Amino acid sequence: MFNIEEFDIKLDTEFIGRNFIYVDEVDSTNTLLLNSKEFSQNGTVVLAEHQTKGRGRKNREWYSNSGQNLTFSILLNENINNKLINILSLGSAVVVAQTIENLYQLNIEVKWPNDVLINKKKVCGILSESSSRGNVISKIVVGIGLNVNQPNFPGKFEIAPTSIRKEFKEEVSRERLLSELLNNFEEMFNEAIEKPTKVLNDWRMRCKMIGEKIKVVENEQTKFGVFDDIDDEGFLILKIGDQKEKIHFGDVSLR
Ligand code: BTN
Image (cartoon, rainbow, N blue to C red; front, side, top):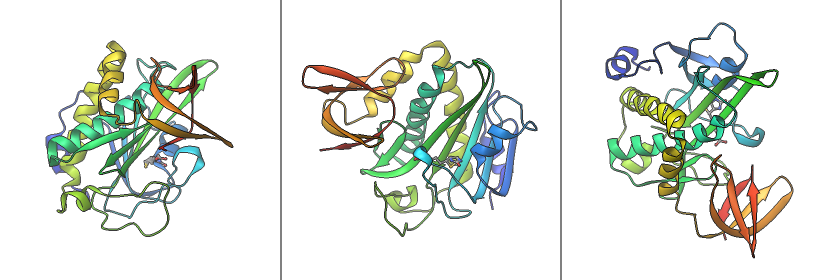
């Protein structure tokens, strides 16, 4: 059980998580916030103990043990624009990394576009989605799947998964972690609007792949090059020989 009172005492935000929806089971917290007209308050957070159709990037599934982790989504529908989606994804990865580092002194890195790694293993994935009215973006939903107390991860994965408990060697409080995370998220969101370059620079500082030789798998295509940088919208710049190419989607690995 998630103790909402314990979470609420530590929540120190103006709008993120002030409308907090806790559900036992849902198909996907992202789908719920994207499709529902019922939840419209800016900053609404939906936390689910279990998702029956948790979604990851590229239509992959997101599995998470019931009651042990944090699978939640944040609704944003004020002060948003198209450019913000990627910046918020990268910023959310930084927020997760910062929060884990502050609370558990673990060494965290981020991986383009939206993963958070501890000791090269994936502890968190982020899926940002949006819906538009005509050409105007009306909401952004940031979905975060964070492995907190799950002890093991049977199955085959592209990047080996881990949890905070596995790395920290102790069970951790999901309530404290979520409140701290949302406090930091609100700060990052305000920064993303006022100083997006600061958010991008924070991300760069935590990415260990910049300057390295990488492989990018984009749809059916595989590309090899050097991870040159991210641009001001958060896309990856891949240097192939003398050419620079912008990568919008794709899975990145060292080669
Ligand atoms: C990825 O690594 O591919 C992204 C995974 C994102 C998973 C989270 S869990 C909460 C939210 N609801 C979903 O259906 N997906 C995101």
